[in-house]
Length: 136
Ligand code: ZN
Image 1 (cartoon, helix red, strand yellow):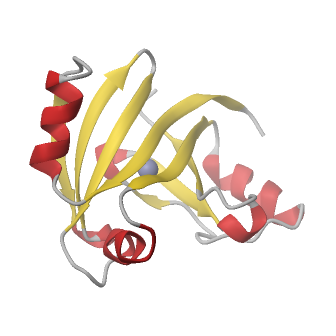
Image 2 (spheres, rainbow, N blue to C red; image 1 turned 90 degrees about the horizontal axis):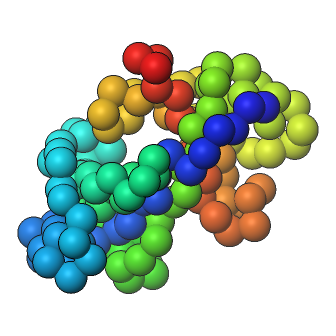
């Protein structure tokens, strides 16, 4: 496995507009993209912090993964995403080492990234995403 850096930190929020205002006006970051990802029932907003992004996630459906997460745990850090090369083989590799996968094969995430989630049961409670930017 070849992880180069933390690609982004995913944060579940109730209200995207309010959260964007906090990150812009208090922390001084600039939101550079807002994108809806219907497959995951979320609206996302992105900030660049060095080479790591903050990804805010607002649910568009209470039954979606972020809707359920907020209902159970409230707002807060939802997942950690690592940038990797060759996502497909990375997923195969961790599965062979006994890690339970949520995504056995890569799927499409926000910003055109290819992503795959590892189950928090296998990662000490941290929902972990591996992602690959095929344009890089
Ligand atoms: Zn993510």
